[in-house]
Image (cartoon, rainbow, N blue to C red):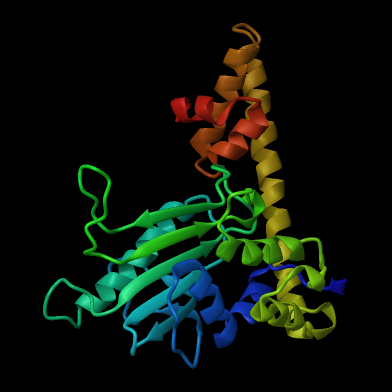
Length: 278
């Protein structure tokens, strides 16, 4: 067993996956493309920004020979489906600025790795930009894709080429991995890079900062949860428990901070019930 720093930390994830050989192997197994790159940019931004909102790509690489852009996003947000779709579209629009028509010169693939999971509890979800006909067959015009990857929800039929990477990411979260379980050489390279003894003081400080920020978020969640519970109980005494839970949920929704899954957890309602109330 090897002691490792968890890949849930942004600084650790970027340390490993910014290595070109690891980045290209990951992309190869999830997208089926062999990239030819020398560098992977961290925290890539477009200057000047496109539109009125600046975008930042956690990891970003361009393969000019094979005409491909790939970015990997790691940090989870309540709006990550919409956020990273926006970022993906920004990568398309940035090309059009320099193009003679609306066809981007480079294909764009966005991989979103959600180490904390997701309320839909799917192992892989894909936004495929290629049009499909009435019978569901792709027409083969557009290659761009956004792929959401949730290692926490591996299934028996998760494709083999994805499985080992997802298992490795999830395996790191308890800070120890069994290397003998993995055959991919690039995954072994990941484990070498994130070995606990190789974490620098600067990286450890960033890990502490990330951990502290997560604790603040959890404290805020508990505050909103308790405030919403009290408000719902106060109003719900006269109308019953279910109605009181719904009132609590509406109160939490009004803050605009918590996800539907978090509100469902706080109130005892189902996610579907919360969606109806939103």
